[in-house]
Length: 101
Image (tube, rainbow, N blue to C red; front, side, top):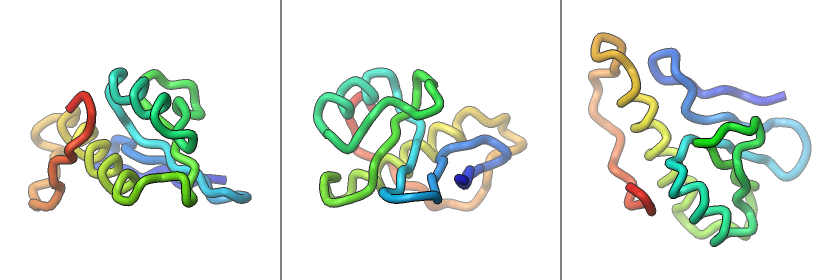
């Protein structure tokens, strides 16, 4: 079983809650997907076979800050895709310094 995380009704993260290790899937650009998959053994293409998602296996193999940066970026992408009337008005997400961004 997993948990889908939404902003304005649009998914920006999926968290796998069953078994070990835990996995998190987030939105990414095609360029980010390719670069992240090549650079990190703990990163794979999205488990649900979507082109613009990556799945991270949580553990010691992930560099510090990568998960947080990817979650921020995924949230920003989901918000940007929302119609203006459904976008959150509260400030808060920071721009991630990620490849392809």
